[in-house]
Image: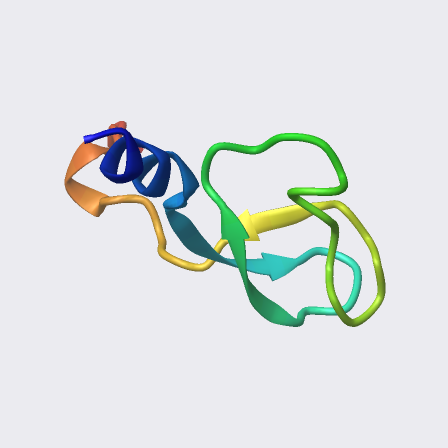
Length: 65
């Protein structure tokens, strides 16, 4: 049981993001963390990013013009 719990703690979830500096698409840990566990862009090192998947259009509010 102890081994299974230890292995479970090492699992990490990732999301696909796009670097705001150079546009590179890469996987980033969802949980965040320090730069050792969640570094910036692998191409340019910039730490600004945005999710590749667009927000769900149904959740956006639309205001009449």
